[in-house]
Length: 269
Ligand code: NDP
View 1: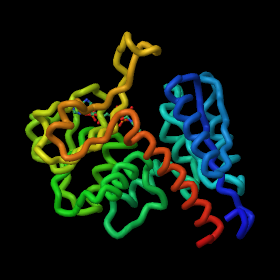
View 2: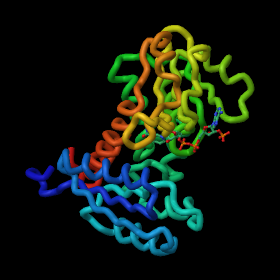
View 3: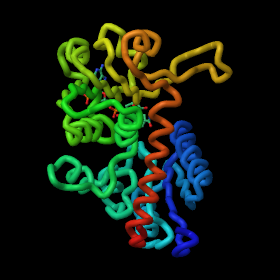
View 4: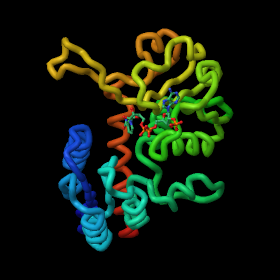
């Protein structure tokens, strides 16, 4: 694109506050952009800034022709209305895919969202790249958040899986999950999905990232998934590791969405 039309895809990231995990995610996204030649712009605002300040930055990026994707790192501080902020991102630059119009189109048959949320998109990409069929399979998604569980269930359904969503009020989650050919877990509970929850041969995508105490680690903690990895390995046909599975895929999909956006905005084939 740079050589053909003089355009470098650009991603703008807005980070509010001092959450360590958010700062790490933003740093990793920036590094990934640099590694593939995407321009990354970052705005870091203090925890006590106003919602209007965030909206002003979004508005600036909406108008900036060098920016093709805008990402607001979540969660936002509690005094801000997340819905107002996400709605302010121009749908054509909504590379996170969280704008209600994008989610609405994802949910409707025969409609195409401009962008699919990165984490669930990465989960489906993992299944495709490893040639695990989805059509006609029974899938269980554990978790129903707007950013992972819900769009993951919609995507699996679009791929013709029969999908059940398990959440915190589900009775007998173990019994339901044990019927699944494909499990996507996005809960945030360390090692919740035990071997007894898994049908032999099932494919498991573990989205959860959970810090657990570990005195042997220099940081005093280590990261584990929602799935009890050692047990799952013995029963499942495939299981994604944490860290190193869905996390890097999420970033890869963000880069892909930014490129898709830049190509669409500049009508570049
Ligand atoms: P949320 O807290 O927004 O949602 C968690 C979901 O899990 C809710 O739907 C909740 O149910 C459900 N849940 C909670 N406890 C249980 C339980 N005991 N049994 C069944 N369901 C339960 O989390 P997110 O979706 O934002 O994130 C989930 C996990 O994925 C986290 O560990 C997060 O760090 C990780 N994550 C990883 C990413 C990556 O790139 N790898 C990206 C984003 C998130 P209910 O709706 O009833 O409350």
